Length: 310
Image 1 (cartoon, rainbow, N blue to C red):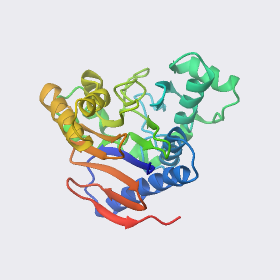
Image 2: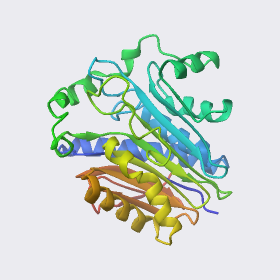
Image 3: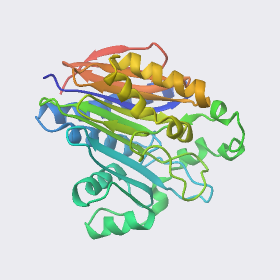
């Protein structure tokens, strides 16, 4: 079995060409981190965690460092991880002071009988297991992320805001390891200027991500739209119904658009190592690696290729 991975760095509008290149590099870096993990013979779960951590640590993305502020200038993060082999999953919602919520989500999956912990309960669990906690919660809201979304409040409550705001930089990854195991992970700083306590699609199974023995998917975009249509599960269900991953992603995104006018995107991978992606936003940042070839893009129809080098 050829191990492979595909990541996304958000469904968004990017008008600056230099910024597009920065996002392309960021997505490739995350995919390379995951692929190196897979080449070491480690699991798909290890790979997706590694990819998402890389993007959480990269301030260009709205996840971990670089998260957007809430309406009260705090950072509340959500994350999800799922093992397709046994359907084990872990998630956290509305967590503050956690730079790598995807890793805390994995601890929930592996060290608790639960699937999702939120807010103070998630933070209490983090302290209990010795998980790193930042002394300054606002460290996660960078100057750049504040500037990028300073006008987001003007769009909230406006039916047109989903087509105007610069985008949603939710990050995610799906991977297939050499033993044929699939996994998915997703992480986000959430909707800019969101209400305190708002939880988006990212930590919700079937919405922000899903993985089983057949396929894995991770989503990005307007969370409320993704929740209403259970976008990740819709993609996996399409694959189980016989469509290839690309067809499945396109069908699910089109359904989200037609039913709730939702803007967003999704990546997917099946047990045969076939990739899929689809988005209704102007752009979606993505990168994949299989058989030593890195593919990546931002624009609709864009697929650049370079060789993978360790």
